[in-house]
Length: 288
Image (tube, rainbow, N blue to C red; front, side, top):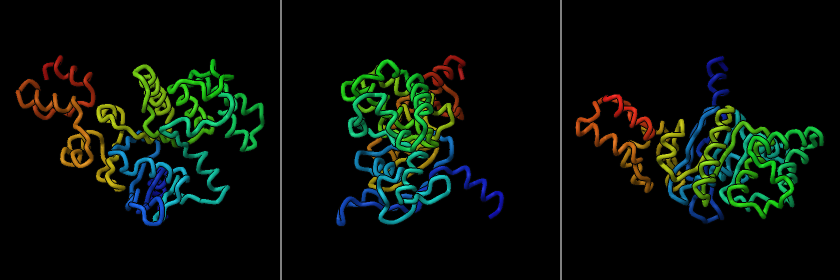
């Protein structure tokens, strides 16, 4: 293998090669030939209607679902489905489910977060230090002795992220992290996601919020009926109106306003489309 090919391999943290998966022998395919590559350190938004295959793909990346056909590679290596292999991949690829109640099972928050590292045989003193750091990082230290089931929805999601983060993963997958949260906890969750990205962790995030994906993501993967329709930078995806219509996605409001202002001559042609209202306001204030 040449040095160039080795470098390419090192830069790809997750790769799917023609992945197929069905629930039940005669079920409709949940994944129908998914092939894609995710670069290390990237922020990738997965979008598509419910049932498009996003959650199933995430579970294939974490080893929960084993493809009927095709291969998932993590850091260049096919997932090993032995017990030892799955332990390794779940340390590297952490998955935070959409419903935190399906992930939390220990009596207290502290016990919940300690479960993973303790099962790996890490010394108790080291585990304690790691847990304290993670709880401080996610601002959940005051809840350490509270029963996990008694927390609010937003607090539960913070704890499920702590479950994953204490394992020091290379990749964190968040399946609709803001689902069912109020505005306050949605803002908090978005701040946590931004902090994780700043640490250089690769983040795969499912969302239905196209405006958020446009501003946040490095790439958007648009899925439909178990297939990848488009994987590209956010502006390219958001301007592909025919593809968006196939997946019941709406063009972000900021791009609609921007296009209207250009058509009316208020903004000059050739400007790079803005990814946020703030950027659009800057264009207007500069008289561009």
